[in-house]
Amino acid sequence: MEQKLFFNGDIITMREEQPYAQALLVKGGAIAFIGSLERARELAGAEAEMIDLEGKTLMPAFMDAHSHITNVASNLRVADLSGCKDEDEIILRLREFAKAHDVAAVEWLIGYGYDHNELASGMHPTYKALDAIDDHPVLVTHTSGHMGAVNRLGLQKLGITRGTADPTGGVIGRDSGGEPNGYLEETAFTKVSALIPAPTLEEMMQAMDEAQEIYLKNGITTAQDGMVVPGNFTLLKAMADAGRLKIDVVAYIDLAENSRLLRANHPYTQNYLNHLKIGGYKIFLDGSPQGRTAWMSEPYENAPDGYRGYPIYTDAQVKAFCEVALHEKQQLLAHCNGDAAAQQYIDAFQAALGEMGVKNETRPVMIHAQTLRPDQLDEMKQIGMIPSYFVAHTYYWGDVHVKNLGQARARRISPVGTTVQKQVRYTFHQDAPVVPPKMLHTVWCAVNRLTKSGQELGEDERISPYKAIQGVTEHVAWQYSEEDKKGTLQSGKLADLVILDRNPLKVEPMEIKDIEVLETLKEGRTLYRKG
Image 1: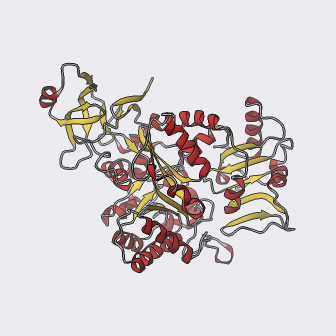
Image 2: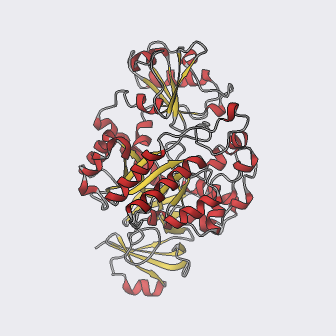
Image 3: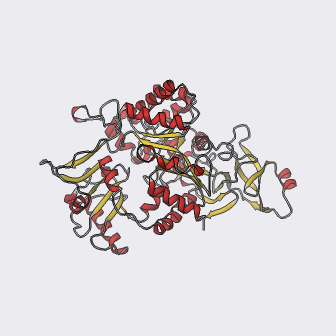
């Protein structure tokens, strides 16, 4: 049995009663002992590998509370549009990608990651800009994943015409004459983008190999695929069957249209099979605050006619979703950015619990929870609902939130400080590929709450480094009902570990984002080591 004994560094247990240990002994993929070096040496076999940390920091590996790992893989095969400053740069990157990857004429040319807030126009592109490429149907996706645009050839391929009605929960952009202008929002975008031909399974498996390396490089050994439809599950199952999943992946099935996937794949429910587990269901209830599609209880700043965003489903539909999850005893994750969407989820879940007369044992999660109010946190605590915050919004779009929501609401974005005060359990995520899965940057955001321009955004909502790290380790294990196996360093738990060059609990708070992941271990095996 392979044994490793780690010593001579800061070993953070993430257990408040014993925050540090002198040594950690790993046997056969699990933690065999954590405590004094003397006792660890006594328990270690003669063949144990002695690993001198040389003052570095060892702690539980990070756990991803919400992302879309198959989308991370998909985006490795499209043009990267992040950081583009205008439409000309978008066109340039698309052309460079087409040339570098030999994209044949008439094939779809796809880009991901533009942010209209960073474009000189401040507007989403339309076909007027994208028609600069006229030998390919073009689709570009906003960094939020909630909207995007196509050129005129793309509109033709997708069959979108003047007579195409806006779908429920979505908007087709139109010019002053009522003709589609190429911009697609929410369900109008997500449903048509799913029609674009996918790469082969083997091509996607190769991309998944690369995607896992991105997570491992950031110290993550448990990841999520947060909105799974048949194509995603086919890929994940193929990876699992081939033994190519290196990290644990928790999949959440699209409840609205693909619930049969969960019912047809019970071997994967609740327990891992070759590192793949179905964790439950996922639904979307609104859009994004930076795209002004999140459903708010009060109007956006300077909004015409009191515009507050909009819901995707009716109250009755959301209640029905909650009833399905409760009846099947499956965890339900609901995407809610606006406080009106959050209230719809809370009310629906409460109503379902009351009418069914059951106890909530499923640990429901509110994904993003950007604009939660204190009174809503109280209600969530009562029904055992977990907010999973995209707290890095404070940095990436904090300045935009001030413009869209006003100072008072923007300062309460991702209200983690209030959540800690109310003793409500929480987790953090990056919603990758929306932003890279950089856990230490997220911890930095929760501790410092600075925008890109350097503006402080809600000093009262800051939390300590320790509390922030709980949101990417211990609390995530609880969210996944894996607290007996992961999240803290204790005997009997999996040896999912990360080694850092510095201790995030001891460095200056502003330095946390600069800490480097040196090594990531899954069940005692090194899967990433910084070269």
